[in-house]
Image: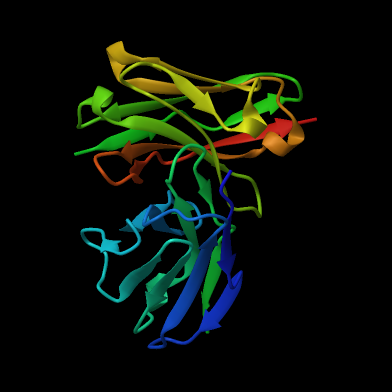
Length: 107
Length: 120
């Protein structure tokens, strides 16, 4: 099974800052990598699919990149509503799995 | 519009079973697979399994084999997750999620979540 490892596990940043979250897979997954944002009491929200495809309605300050085993999610011009937990997920064959999550706090 | 509406919260005793429903609307049910994901308190998202809405064939994650039953009622566009022999660590929020699967694979719509609490 493919293991997904995110870093950092948490981070704190100020409004207007840029942050980057890293996700690594235990084996190559091409670009079968998605990013979700999860807020308390809500369902997870898909931000980026196929490593870099921004979903409709998601602000352009969210950018995904990478392929193979190394991926990043970058959020520029951080806004208060960006707080939450971010997860990467591979869909390179069953069983799918998620990273352990990165909790983003706003200073 | 696409919606996945799950059944309500459940409080169950240790060793009991629970069956959660996920009713789909706004799209052709058989065209998208349905997955189940859970989040236990303080932990991350955990993929549990999926069911083909075309064939009805279910696949469970290794850690859940023999403990969950994934099923469908295509007549009412509804997917079900049944968990048997509930344990305290099954206390979690359970989500169904639709998989977009045409070349790229991702969960584009999610249910609102169903909280299951296992009481000892």
